[in-house]
Image 1 (cartoon, rainbow, N blue to C red):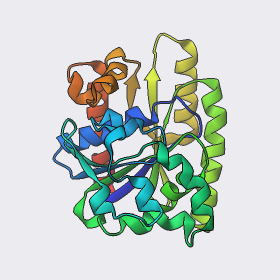
Image 2 (image 1 turned 180 degrees about the horizontal axis):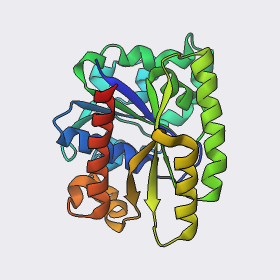
Image 3 (image 1 turned 120 degrees about the horizontal axis):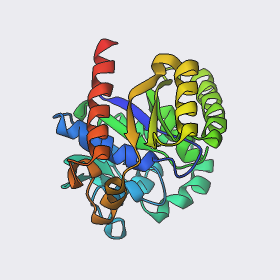
Length: 256
């Protein structure tokens, strides 16, 4: 049965999608069966996996609203070697349309239950807001991976997210827990980055992944080619860091 993880942070621009796509590719490189669910109406994870969001016949939108089947909607990333439940701008309308539906917070969990035995990992790329879509991701997941920059404002947003996870754990999904914090876009030359990194380790301890993702131009370039960064330039420091992160995540789960 698949381990289902949300990649979530209420703050935008912190590398959620970059993490989701590259972790998916990194795990696939370790011979794991992976499904990446794009829950963001921007569809960036879909495009980053080499799938044209403008040519989709079916997407996560139809799946959430009960108008389509996940097995039909999913597609395969030829560049990343993992499956994708893609997204496009139609998904923005789902927020309003889902309000009237039964089990509106559980729609994704119900959809994933059909395929969870086909994968080792299901990764959910959440939008940068606490919305009905993010709530669906949190209710479907076993845990949350939080990518964050080592900056002051990121710490403020982190406390809000942790409180949200506690509420969802208490009221909707008792399986949900924080799997770990991943430091991304890290610049060791900045004193603030070092200070925030130390604060995170002091406060969250073992919940902070040892792997640190450096700020890397090649990772930023990869989405424009529709190729995950770990494959686009495997020798780049950022790509190698995501490969190591995949290994660390697998090793951590095996110890549990």
